Length: 117
Image (cartoon, rainbow, N blue to C red; front, side, top):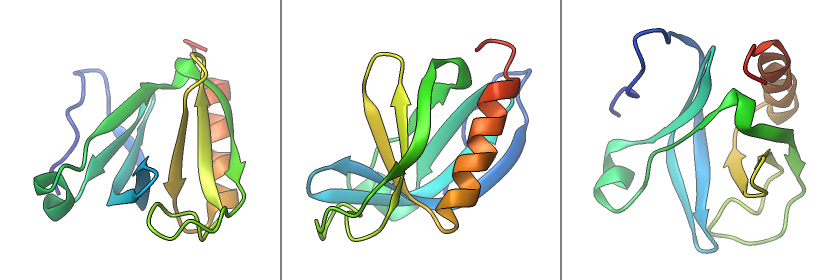
């Protein structure tokens, strides 16, 4: 898994294995990284080779952080409760992470302390 590209002012403050829902039929394995400025996802090596995409968002762009109840979909992570991040433009990102309630609390705290939000 490649490390995320950070700006000179960023350092990783937290990281966790995660699967990102990339489409209705695909969840991509990788890792979430939190810095003082952004949340980033980097796919693992195999998923990156097969079309798994990186993703990032500035903390200031996050309008809501919560959970998405299971939907029953088998191939995109929908069998589990997922981390749901809604951006200011209305788009939503979904991630399967262990300890999802603790992750929600951690990310809400990071957004609340971000000077850009």
